Length: 178
Image (cartoon, rainbow, N blue to C red):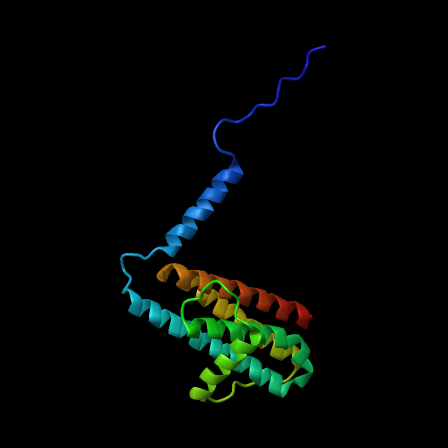
């Protein structure tokens, strides 16, 4: 009775190794400064735009919380993360430590009161309010994802992290509204 042939061991790298190295190469390419960069001024503009976007989203959360206090328990953790994002973009380069929710809230609140704007309109029902927040989170996450190619290293990582959190917030807001 013949034995089955030994399993063929493929020569060269495995599929997982190739995918991991391709992903790492893409990340490294996205984190390096490109030839069209304007240097620090472009980074400062991108950081200021990201901080302004986070403060705008924070204003939306505040408007919904003011109009719909029944959603406070559910929205408070998400709002705290948005405030931390606003603080991270406002405070400058991060040192790798997490920003506390209280610190982020205070910084973002101070920045928001410096330039008062009309409060965003809140839809009529809780479900509509959550859907509007989810749409705003998703749109901001998409814009931040598109900006990744235009900024260097640390800011790209911060934008990617905030975009991922925004996408998760949109999911949580959408799933909870069902």
